[in-house]
Image 1 (cartoon, rainbow, N blue to C red):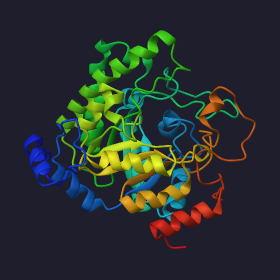
Image 2: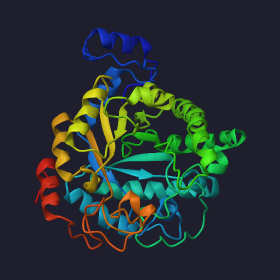
Image 3: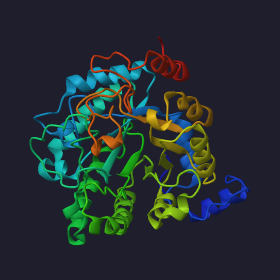
Image 4: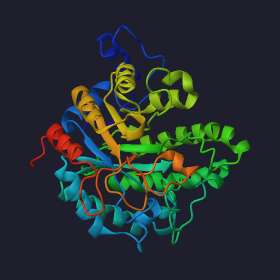
Length: 377
């Protein structure tokens, strides 16, 4: 992988070569550490990435996935074998800063064990370092039981609200970023780094009203520093943080945070739970940056984000990571609205592809994945 270099000059040169369509010129000047040439070379070497956001069905959040008492290599191995059978070659997984602060290298040793399992199935990994969604008060130790019928009932943010609100505590996050990227930054089992999942999610259900408006400004400043720390660690893999608001056309106008993420990411990532037309608009809009595209979250059936959209991602060679694989403690077969009105059950699953025993939720979806990915049947 080429060395990470400052890219302003090369980016300007790429514009003159027509890397960005003349019909629209991105208003965000790129200050990403990788040139567009380097990002394209990475994309050419990895090929089309297709996978899911992976949490073993035995875990309800990031802490349960990695804490020694609930780390479950057997389930991870079994379910990643199912992912490989669908034709998936990569997955997105969530880490947490509290885990490293509490255990240091012992936590990273479990990440290493997980990477070995994933690699044995031909699956590369996109780790996510921080997360701005759901419970803002993470706590180590035994996690509460998920409330019945509630989507992602025990998922936690990282860093938590108390850390995010106190910028004097932010420097303590730097060693976590540095340790993870130093340990795995040259590891070919890792394909890309996602620095922060939906950092400016308002989480109005979880946050007091007066805190919601402050979150975006705080996380903008923090994520800018996280990019600095990650770039200084100089990993061989690209860095990204995904936009999710306005991805179909007003991305840059939505927020300064969106503009910063687009300007600093080596490869552009985004979320789309929209039907085909809006997904294609998002791809068309973001393609103008002249960088590889990854959709790091999709598949919300009741919103029109259905499995057949995998064909769209394949046609445009946009990396595609659906949400969820196996129905389990995350309870993401239930829709987001179940946070307001928990459901006893659902006729149409929101996320996820397989039952806990490996049976497909919809055999036609499994056949589609295998067809598009050319997986053996």
